Image (cartoon, rainbow, N blue to C red; front, top):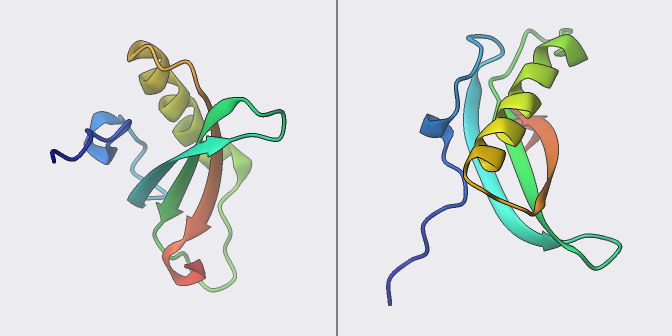
Length: 88
């Protein structure tokens, strides 16, 4: 049995230098309305103890996920969430 090709791979994304994305996990998902969707977990590098990424830093990452999936013709909506390595 051949493993299915991942829907989205980290090296397909043009990402900002900071915050650095360490891992990308994409799972098939059924949303609350019963529609097929994707659950995209973006794992970021750990930041300074009292620092948290701002939405202005996260939005370009989310936009890039949406852009690449749309370019691939993916019709399932991607629900994107962010965590740091230490939050896993």
